[in-house]
Amino acid sequence: MQKNESNIGKLKKGKATDKTKPVTNSSNKSVLLHFPAGILYKGEKFTTIPKGKYKSRSITTEFLDDLIIEEGRIINEFKAEAKFRISQEEMYRFCELDLLYVSKNNSFRRYKTEDELDADKAITDLLLDWGQNQDATDEIKALFNITDDTKIFDYAKPELLIANIIESCTKEGDLVLDYHLGSGTTAAVAHKMGRRYIGVEQMDYIEDIAVARLRKVIEGEQGGISKSVEWQGGGDFVYLELAEANQFYIDRIMATTDRKELLEIWKEMRDRAFLSYKISPRQLEEVNSLDGLSTEGMQKFLTEVLDKNLLYIPLSEVDSKEYALTEADRSITRSFYSK
Image 1 (spheres, one colour):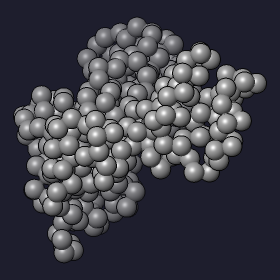
Image 2: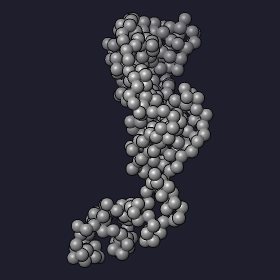
Image 3: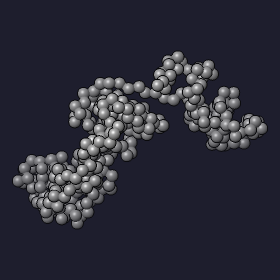
Image 4: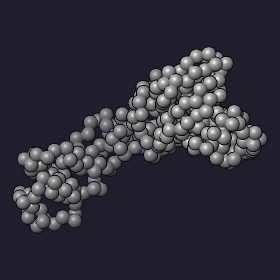
């Protein structure tokens, strides 16, 4: 695809459009701050917020005092603990400028200063407009119905960021490749945007996270960019795993501490596994019974003696009777690698 400046129009100067900024960040440590009376409250004009913990998206705010609201203002001093990204001094300054407020969800936010509103957007601001790490955390939690601070995946990317990247350099029907699929954001966004995609992941969590996420996308989940692209669900995807050769033995070795079972695995390996060329026949005879080795030593030896270049069945061996692959496995493999 040729370079097209219109595709990356987001990366040009422009005035800041968002008039507010967060004062908390989910990756920060919780700190306790003291707040003066007079802070704006965005909820009911006359009410009392009991002290306690309140959760909004991925941020938990704990008020150590009741908040008494009259005419939309908190009339008493109070203390609060949250993952603030501002210091006590900065908070006082924002209060003096009447920029800090408590939202109707009982979380903190602030209005931007005049200088911030007048300033041209910096690249960092533009990147924030494309989504933040906190957005990605919120998307994952909403998708999997997580209500506490549990993280099922670190450093997920927000869908908005991936969507803008995909939109900048592809069109509908193009093929998107992510060879570190992780939480599956790229595949989910590509699916919603009508792109074809291939995702590759080495770790075992792919079924529990990325594959589960794509199933929810097909069902029509409304997180991330779904509303902006009017996503209603549909489509399909194919999930494949590499057929195991030596990896089959590694999984069994690491799953047991039973010496008798390890000896049985060793006996089977000698007959059927692909052993490393670095291990001579004489060395194999010397450790034939694995006598004298601890359980950990047995596991270490058995994994080291396997040829790591043959953890999985090579494409060239797909028709080998030795591996006994089903016709369905052979057929889909040929289909996947065909031009």
